Image (cartoon, rainbow, N blue to C red; front, side, top):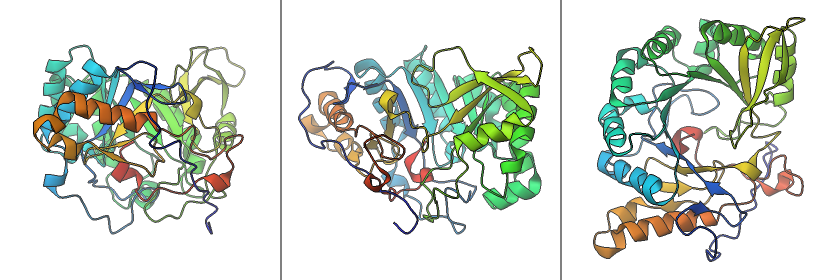
Length: 364
């Protein structure tokens, strides 16, 4: 509480699942999850200050991670039985997983029309972008917070900006588009670079998405006062650009999109997105279900309740059949809280507490 970080009020955890679509990932507030986020690893080769301590974390042992076959099985259950319509592979950093290309190829063989995207920091992407595209990856989100080497080093604690830029270029050449760039602004470090990063993205046809810094850092150093809010981001961009609401429906997307024009010009330059999880939350239309690298369902990014699927997958016998695994997954999502607490009317800041896991250990 010294950080001003509130405690999360849970949903009715353990409440029986009744009614609704028996085959879907429905929760007790009427939302249905169709967007699956699956973490392939907790490891990362950067040490971003808003995510991980400088010394890193204690990584999961290999036998604690979902295997390639288990990943393929869970995705199959999600798509074929539970209404999943979109898959995002995350980490940690998924590119550090040696069998990544094989996993994507197997998923594509089983689900020819499924949109499969990947969130990466871009380090090592230049060497693997074409193989990922050939395996059946649909598109990429690349996390890059600045174009300046000194700020990149300060933010990530690693001198890899040139590798990230080369990876983005290779991904675009491989056709992994629309390519989205994810950026977190930190006060006094890269907040003054917002317009510069947007112009760079517009020039190349990439969609930039600014993400409010969330209380998911391993050092638990986040404060509401220290974060750059969505309103501040819009103000930073307004110095160089006119922003207007994107006429396309948001349709459950975490980012609110804006059309971008130069001051006084009618020419549309592109769009920019802002993900305001803290100050302008979108929980009422959340359609995401998350599975961590060790096979635990998290119904919310900020959840402190996890439901283990991996133990069930490895239990053997009828306990591990598809019906049992699907039912446990559904039960986990049924207990999803109405909201995480921050910024919601009727759920004050005193109703939220920061999860023990950092972002790298959850999978965004």
